[in-house]
Length: 358
Image (cartoon, rainbow, N blue to C red):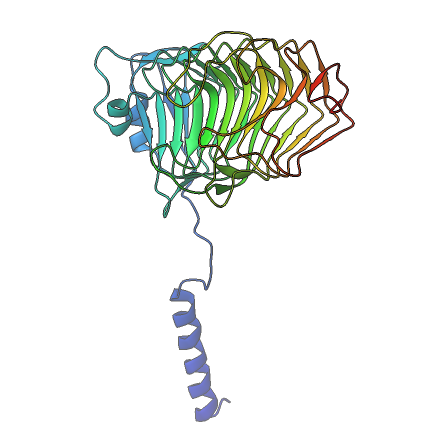
């Protein structure tokens, strides 16, 4: 027979178990509700599906043409189509959201302090918008994959005030500015920011003003891209601000015949026949690229070119190595600003300026 004391202890234990069971688990990670797949068909609104989605959901867009501007502010959202048969293009009247007012096709928008994270965009075509096809602002781990950006008025795709972006296996062509544009920020001066390993890889970039532009960033890789028929292939842009732009990799790209002509701007001379251009950057590694047939008479024409930035900042401590270059004019390797501690090693080329770089 239980004693009164034992019965009392048993009762306290039972109460304690019930109370503990009612408490939330300590340090438990938030769990999304069961992910939902929202299917959008021609005649329906993609934005309505986006607005109805919760973090972790997928918006599946069936083949067809959709005329609207898409604004995404939800974490962990996936927007996916059926390839180039899923087309996003402008309506006669832009959408009333911020993306429509900006003139972009798809916008992923957060803030520097509270970025939108893990948004994935893939397998669709974004074309004809007056500004950018796909644009991220205040994002972390935004991914754009297997997507076509074509005939947009500025950038095909890109991001600013963002980290850990991935732009892989896309086609970005015939955009008025860049195929892929990555920057610390578009509208303010300041030193380079850390992109935390942002990757631009395996893309086909053609017919743009520039294939890839990286402006005032650090810790980023441009690799394995096919870049042709632009005015310039790759621009790595810095200036005198600190931290300096650099600590980047430009490697294993095929950069050839970027011989279109682009008129001068208020910051740059005309551009034609520029392969890979470094301006005002430090610690950038240009390695193992195939650079062929980029020819022109611009101050930045040539295969791999080091050129003083628009504000006169030289390149420094960049390593140009193991590249294979041919048929670039006026030179395969051109060190035109002669900044300090740039190195040229194990490159295969025909002509350098000054001599001795091949």
